[in-house]
Image 1: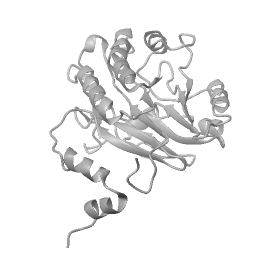
Image 2 (image 1 turned 90 degrees about the vertical axis):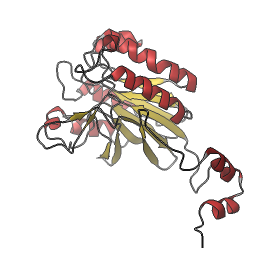
Image 3 (image 1 turned 90 degrees about the horizontal axis):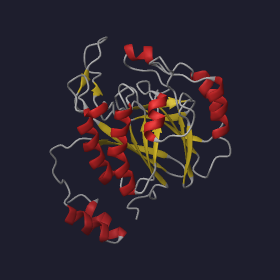
Image 4 (image 1 turned 180 degrees about the vertical axis):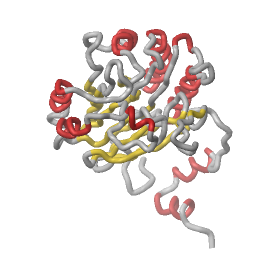
Length: 297
């Protein structure tokens, strides 16, 4: 039931990124418990994304490309996906290794081929593009992938397509991260052409952010592992074990919206109690507006 002028979303995507797991749950850099962070994220995901249609993981699933790290990701996230009743779309990032990722996550294709995929979810199509380049941390794509992408985006379904790629096709605020940017934007723009791409979902930068590419919204999910603190003095980079998050993407017939959800447990209080919320929802529209929206005299 919609409580405002907009209907309920036609599709909901739970988007997380940059889990940076190590085999056996070893702490990242000896400091960050990325396994526990993902377990905490999964618990909050099950609540916040109970109405999701798909879970998207936009790369850097593993930090060193270890098979055990991918197995751990699967162990943590697949039960949540099963509880919600949705598929998981896995996308490769610059820290991932294709052969190990493909085998451990049960992904189709030859071991070293790009991990590209297409999934139809109701009236929405999810296209995952592998922007990783073996042996490098910057991103790109080749002519073969560009041709594949053009074909994958043909004949759009009613809600169009959402493109998932680890490296965002944007200008990066962090100067050093520009060395690791996506370098084939012109080829990507040509491949997309006039296709009905509603949004591009990315990670890589360990920040929440947004922008546009070829007039398409680009939405970045903050990492579940650790965040990049752009408030630290440049040009150094500052990683912090805080502000981990994931996104909820809502797709409507004529718009796309995204919300940022804190990924880890934290102190909180009910600013509106469950009892009051249920009472307000149960009211007729006019009474509801009078009770909830009207300011007191």
